[in-house]
Length: 160
Image (cartoon, rainbow, N blue to C red):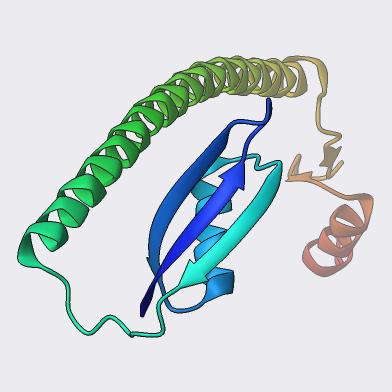
């Protein structure tokens, strides 16, 4: 880790100097560009050849305090986004519940219509359609088919 002193220009030819603690020059520049935004030109980068082997506790506390503030803002945004998402989910669920209720009503109506038509059909079968009955001309026995009646006559009345 090293401390890099970077002199740079922003729009309007304003010069600034930043001290950045980083592993290497590329990471220091990347951090500066990410933090500052649009940089017009880098004037100079210098670094002492001495590596950083420790950081004062006060500096660590300041860094952590700054980091905690950044995290809190991100968490609040996430919570707000979650609330918005939850509200959208609730709205969609209520819309889906209403659609399901409508479909249930429609299905119940169709089932009632089917039951009514089935009942009407059964009553028409009972009232309008008479079964053909074949009657033995000797003993007045009733049969469902002509073949059944003929078999009855040949077996029961073979002597008659």
